[in-house]
Length: 130
Image 1 (tube, one colour):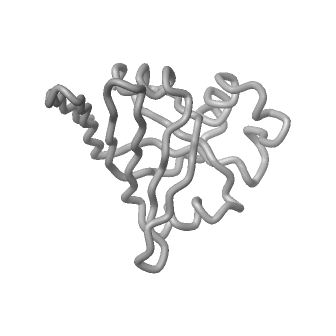
Image 2 (cartoon, helix red, strand yellow):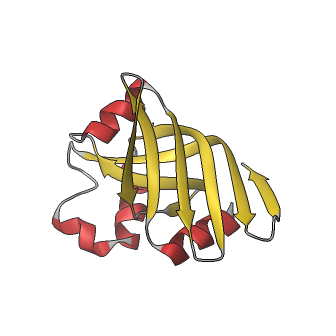
């Protein structure tokens, strides 16, 4: 999982895919955190992406660093604990202008049953499950 985290931190932007009414929805994200041996992302509960995840927690992330790309699939689980929210917001202090660990909107989610696959143009693949 650390290798996945490091890659996502390095690229800074990744693309999260959800489904809404059978239609794929993809948008850029940039938050990633490890807390209590789980990989977390953050969003707002008032956003469509949050509603899509709650309706269908199966998601995929994709990103590319110019040499290799990552596809991460799994289920996202909401964590309502203030400690988890604080940890992620501490990692991204600029988000504290819009989010708070104690507000009703801040949402942090961790990956469950995740499979990360690294690919390269050389045809190499590496799979990590967590």
